[in-house]
Image (cartoon, rainbow, N blue to C red; front, side, top):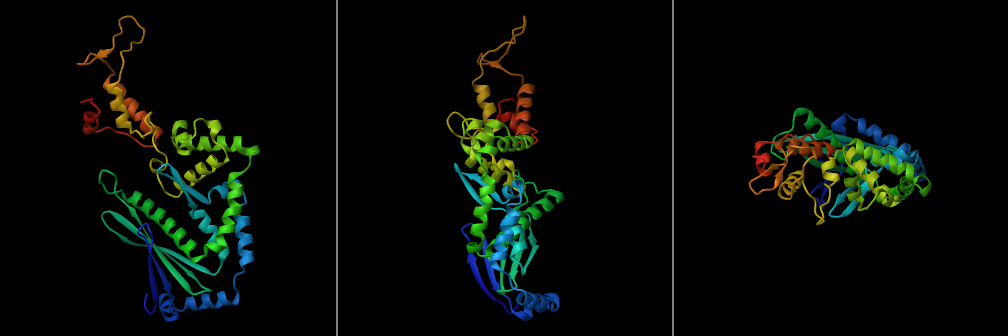
Length: 329
């Protein structure tokens, strides 16, 4: 952007925030003088902070579903990282007023797609540009399909939009709004049981079983999921809606040693620790391996692996290397 004063800041996650004070001539060149009219209207009808706060709280607390969509939660290292979601940023942007926001894909290479969101406060004449990168390769190194690249770009745009809006609007104004909305998210003990059931049903529809849900909130049983735990689960669901995968958000079932166990590791353990077991019918004999221990049929083990991956919400087609690793070939 020409004739603009820039101030770069580096975030802990490596994202660069570009704070720009755009010149009037530069913006006029971008839109043929339309920005001059936007600035004039912004100064003629300045925002009211009191009205902004009141309107944002009213929107965010309109109903429980809206309130729950305002925050995300990401489990990391045994802790839960919480923050404002894209929906919260949309509420802030629509009620702040005199704000111009644009999201634009700026680059795509063999590994990443990069989207830039630009937010410009027309009253204060301060502009912030925020770049977000997202990987467009699978774990095996294959490039996403065109449809998946489009979905990934849309998710990156939403995150860039959120980051830009929540940087341009001071947190001093949004903090009290978030606190009021959180009260609706938490609810009270009167509605806990019904809301907990709805949340558990949602996770099951996504292929996440009860044990993995309990692992997210470190609970021993469904009855241990209280108001705090329910708030965390709502945040995880919103993070999924914002574009993160359940594989990232919901860890695998914990093993007896406290670690996380992949499906392949679980299968290897099963092969190593199997006990002879018949089906109780005459003439039925368990299959015996070289070590004298009973073994399941390979087809049955693959079915079990496939069923476990379906619970994770992922299709599983074991490759020859997978079968070799599991001891099936």
